[in-house]
Structure formats: structure tokens, C-alpha cells
Amino acid sequence: MSIKSLIIKPLLFALFFASATLSTMSSHAAGLSDLFGNSANKSKFLPVDEAFQVNTNTKATAKGTRLTITFDITPEHYVYKDQLSATFPKGVSATPFTFSQSPVSIDDPTFGRVPVFTQKSVVATTTLSTNNGKAAKNVPVVIGWQGCAKAGLCYPPEKIKTKVNIAKP
Image (cartoon, rainbow, N blue to C red; front, side, top):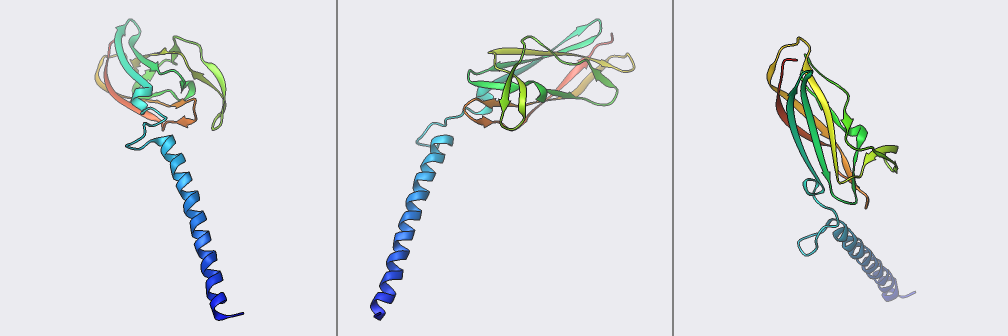
């Protein structure tokens, strides 16, 4: 074998390998840009605040303060029922959430069979009260929730921080 063929064959192999790798990377990159978008493409998935509009409201009642959380859900999206939570300081308690709609059960790739809300609008309600029976002002409440797009993207868990006044029952 000549020195020329010892040099040329590995060089040709290296060029072929590099060309194939760049071709694969280029097509993979195009797939990612289709999924998440770039300045030339609109993303396949909406930002979380466009996919889900979440509003809170409070109202004094005879049993404490009713906290309502309204989810306006874009079509082809859903909110996990069991990921909805409310945390608050010691000395405050809450009733279990009630919902304006019934959830549907889906087979989720992450959580298995779970209840979710797919309706356009769902209202979750709980009643907050103080353990000592007195009114409380500016009580910090953190609402946690999570939603997904049916096309295959689960948004990270979200948190909403708010302050509520709890009425004396």
C-alpha cells in the first residue's frame, strides 16, 4: 500500500463522517426549532400565561373568607386537579377545594391515570379561616398549580402569590 493511499483513505473517511454528522445535526436542529420556534418561526406551544389565564377573588362569608381561583383554559390544554394547592401561614386553615366542573381522567405519561380539567373555564373554591376565630389582614397565600398542552408539553409547576383578608366568621 502506498503512502498516498494511507493518507487519502482516512482523510476521505473523515470527510464523509463529518458531512453525515453535520447533515444529521442540521435536520435535528430544524426539528427543535419547529417545536420551540425561533425568530423566524412561531412556537408550536403557547407561553404559560397565554395557555392558562388564572384569576383569584375573595369574598367574606359566615364561615370565613371564600377564595375562588378561576382557570380559563385554552383549547387543547388541561390543568391537573391534584396539582392544585394553597399554602398559608400557621393559624390559617382551608376547606378542601370544590370545583365548578367535573374532571376527566387521562393517561398521563408522567403521572399515570390522573384527573384533569379540559373545560374552557373551571373555578376552584376553598374557604379560609383563622384557627383563633379572629379576622386577619394581608394573609399571604401561595396557590400552586400545573397544566399541559395535549400536543406534548407539560409546563413547569406555577405559583401565584397573593394576600387575602380573612373575615371573622
